[in-house]
Image (cartoon, rainbow, N blue to C red):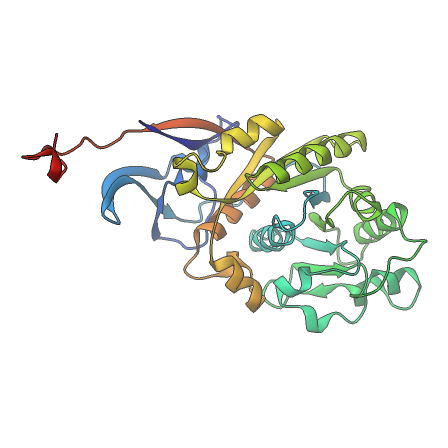
Length: 348
């Protein structure tokens, strides 16, 4: 039986240039990399029939190169909330890697950790020891906004703003209007308006969720290919649309090609058909995520780049140009059986 694999194809068919990737002239291989490519990226991918780990399969070799800077679409600042509804699907990891990917593309980025009491974005970025002031001190008049913003030393055009300190409860007076005031203050800074404001939304659909989505005009819905995550994602999609957020794109995280081939995991096409959202990116399962989290060093900064890091880079490129992916099916041919002398030896 032929295997059904997800394949990616861009909705913007007129664009012909490939998205930038970290290292010029660096060659790497993706096994089953049909998830990642859009029409833009397919120009530099040439699948070869080759042996991999003792079996036949398609290996896509891509030349990673910078060829142009992406053109920023839409009005600045682009206010994007990263949400999911279900916890543990990778919202904070997505925020950290997309934020630094955008900063590496020379855009000004401010990431807001809106998870009060359970914030983790500073840990993933390695900035936990530099958080002296938060947004609550700014609202109380105890410090300036510039003092609460933490600038990353690796990429100075990336800044972090935490809403509150850990183990502190959300004050009764803090809500969506307060977050809108903070976003307006970021627009009016003397250093200039940021190009992107990324809001890391807490799990659930309670008051913290409502507060986080209030100033946003775009949303990235992070989900995994399991039924519990998809049901929560479908519920969150409805809440976002009711709040006036119409531009919703989806990131499918922790995808495993071996389980998809064995029909033990829903494919990207199945997920897209269930939710009916534009596909921003597909992130494969990667053990390097745990290592980078513990080190406070996001995946997109790793050298050599990992598969998940490359997928985040390409998702950031699509986010800048408001591009998307489209999942279709590709049939993979099953290699013919070898004939032997006896059926006992594997022949026919």
